[in-house]
Structure formats: C-alpha cells, structure tokens
Image 1 (cartoon, helix red, strand yellow):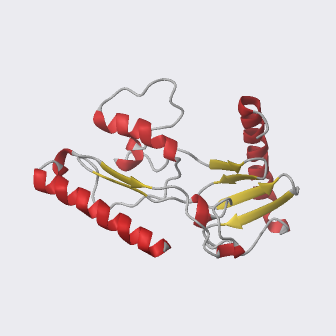
Image 2 (cartoon, helix red, strand yellow; image 1 turned 180 degrees about the vertical axis):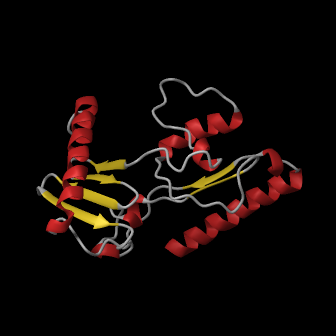
Length: 192
C-alpha cells in the first residue's frame, strides 16, 4: 500500500508538470515537492514516525523553476517552515517580519553552503534532538537517556556513541545547545 501511494503521487505530479509544460507555463513556474515525515517501516524496530531517526525526520524537498540551478543537490539543513520565506524571496515578495523561517535562496543560488549550523526537533515531552552536518544527539527526557550518532560514518544510526568517552566533547557541546533550545521552547510554549 505504501508503494502504491508513492506511485500514485508520482503519476499525479507528472500530470501537473505535463499540463504546465503543455500550457507553456512551466518555464515561469516554481515547482516545489515536499511531504510530511515518513513512516519508519520497521527501521530501528519502529513502524510510525514519532522518532528522531533520519528515516523519519528527513523529508523530500525538491525545488525547480526559473533561476534554479538544474541537477544541483544540497546537504544544507533546513526546516519546512523555510519554504514560505524562500518562495517570497524567489518571487520578489517581501517576507513578513513575523515569519520565523529563513529563505533558502542563498543556498539554492550557491551563495552560501548553509543557513543553519544545526537544526532541532522535538516530539511532545518525549524526545528532543539537535543535529548538525555530522552528528545528532537525541534526548528522551522521560527516560533521561541520550543517543549520539555520527551521521557521516553511520548514516543508518546503528552505533550509539553516547557512552564512548572519545565523543565526550561533541556530546557536551550538543547537549548544551539542546538544553538551551529546550529552555527557549518551554519559555515560549510551555512544557509540551
């Protein structure tokens, strides 16, 4: 069923692109494809998506259109909330001051390699995460347990480095960042 849904979406996106091409509108239209977080489908023994592993937190994001370089791939970290200011920036519309996201246009155009040095995630009061381009620290507050992964060496997150003394420095750095961000979240939104 999961693959049938993917196949169906692929066909529908193809229909939209085909119609834009037929109408002559494709050359001046931005097409952005993304989705919600995916299901674990058995990875790490999980089925749902309420976790901080890469298989669930990473979402597809593809952007095509005028002035977008073709066949370019970026590992820049971002949030889906960055799409609104990105669309505004690409189309020349001013981004409202109240928007918290950041435009990805500098990364898209190759003027910057990254917008964020790290990103954060949380699920209710059960999980917290900080991830940079190399490492990810997950914290389970209700268990007072951590997991640390080297995403470059271990992209499937199978080797927890949180107890490895050789990684104490990166563990503490990421933990300090996560503690600060968690305090900011709780100050803004309460402990949810």
